[in-house]
Length: 270
Image 1 (cartoon, rainbow, N blue to C red):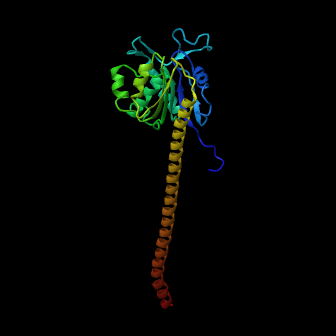
Image 2 (cartoon, rainbow, N blue to C red):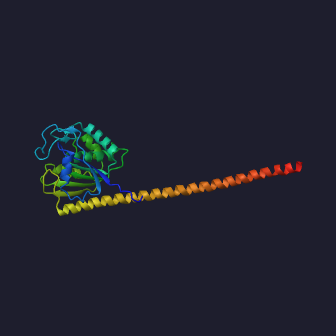
Image 3 (cartoon, rainbow, N blue to C red):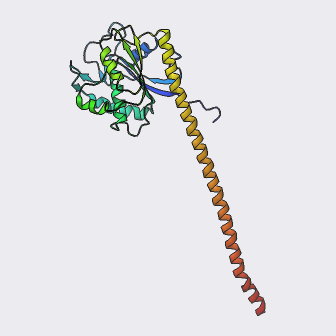
């Protein structure tokens, strides 16, 4: 429709452990603004207040949050199911969303939701996610989770930022293998949202441009199919109307034929 503002693709951005949505938004602001200019970015806070000291105290103001809790081996989790339920409800009521961007715990959680959706475990009535930006993400290590979430390659367009000095470098590389044809962007930094050099900026711009182009093509195809459907309905309605006219005309002719003998008979009786 002329004058209608085109709807942006929507990305749910999940922050790291004991930080906040506002902090992740500030971290992403280091990137060239043109990269996500055509996207609507949502930065919610985790559902639990930080249960201990935050690594960003003195760097960024509180409050700080966490999505769930875990043991030192990252094999046992507390409040994970509650977190998943909360996010699925958030996605359903605030969405639909087209994908995720996550850092550390947020990236790990995003990948889990993508794997679960692909296997029909969550978000069954939500459209399939199309994209994922992972920064220092990892897989869950509980076998009962892995057997479901990473059972098959996750067919979502994904880009994975992996730092040379990141303590999650190897887990981040392992997470990338869970996705179909992932784009991997390496950087020399540690466990952080990295500043991007020109090469990385071009890679990410090309990646987002391809996703937007694919989304636009799908929108055009759907609009075309809807147009064809409307034309078909109009054609069928017109045919039904013509058929109705013919039927009424034939019925009128039959009734006229039936009345003529009555008129003749009445005239003869006079």
